[in-house]
Image (cartoon, rainbow over all chains, first blue to last red; front, side):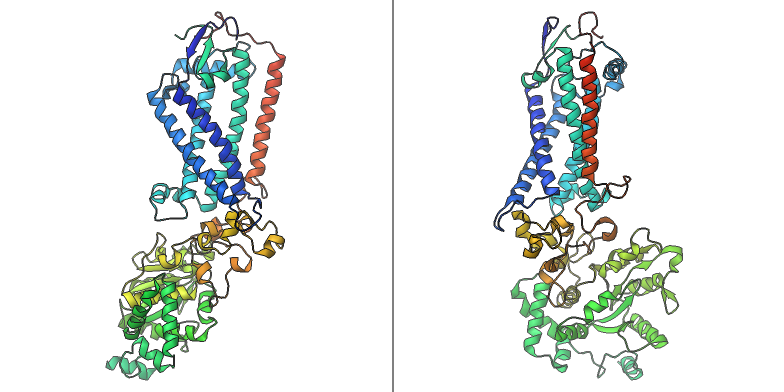
Length: 221
Length: 379
């Protein structure tokens, strides 16, 4: 950490960090198991094996965990501290937010050399998270709709059945599959950006997601 | 009574042998169907209706006493495949029983009468038995341009359907075309074809989709009506739950191979020869509701998955447009040329993102940025 960073701020509270790492784990598990469900290899040696059965079980369990985590994070944006709050996700709604957003964008586009310091979320990142949240919602809705497909009379189908009015059967599968790749693209961006800002800001961006503390030059106003 | 005698004399309708309606049981005895065969048929129907075996005597008793309902069979935009499925039942006794239970007063493909005589028979049935006859429809109904794309006896299919189905006790739409529009309604649907439910909104329609319909399901639907006096419980698409309540995938004989992870990966490979799961080859069983695995076709001889070909999803609405491609799990991504799968585009996207950030990272490593400090800090 830079000698300039003299303030230690508690930014990410425990529930938020849990949500983050549960999401990470779920995305990895869901992507891998989901890929095998879409393109299953012949893992089974005998007909009494249950390999795809287990892969599907893990996928569905992780899907429930992921859905609970995402919903918890949304609820936390109304409960948690201001850094976790829902207002953070709409920087474009305020003048100050727009200013910060443009500053960050100019830095990312290699126009400015001044590394903007952010105490909580990066405004560019939170804007991307809104897109990501939409993708998560699509994944959860299409996923549970497909999960309910086998039992049209079930309570779950009654909840998610409206999805079948919006998607064709194959269109829903394609959407669910393709959004996985969009999340993969996001993950690459996310890891790179966290790494970059950790190096440039000297504020321990990456370790803040484990311990919750970020270091800044100035105290947050 | 005298009306029926006249009809019999004129040969317009060939029921009412002595001016008296016979029960199904009486007719079968007259035709020489043994009691044993009759009870076997009742057991098979009980099974088809997904009722417990203890219901077989109830079914037998009811069929013994019940009168045959008059039935007319209309053909619209179709290939007569459902008629074929009905007539070509491997076991002649069953086919006979089917035709005996259904007092078929009008059927374009199999009736002896032709021309005006045939039309008169239809008119007679639908007037005399208004609200009491069963109408079976095979084929889709073209709606575009006032329904000019199909007519029989000078009447458009649409007018005919509204007239006949509207006055029927119930309409059974057999085959996917009659139920959901099927192949004629596939994109771009040049004739504006629809299923019966859409063409005649007020009618009581039971959909028995499938390409072709399983004749056993048709018979079971009629038997259900005869035994219980009401139409069977239907699902959201108007299909009887006894035949369309379960997914193909859940009753499939190859399901253990799915769960085990044993798949056909290429046509004719080792797994294909061993009867492994066809999921990888694009089988649409996981999205299709039909009793094919248990009921099978051609007198329970076989069915598509049983003979090594994936399910096409033919009993689902708009299957031709929404269940494709036949031999792949996922459709190609629209707007990306013909042969681009989601995985190819996805890998390209991920690689593109990674490359873009690799370049960004390299450029960042080369330049000297100003660290945040008291002077540079924003706000």
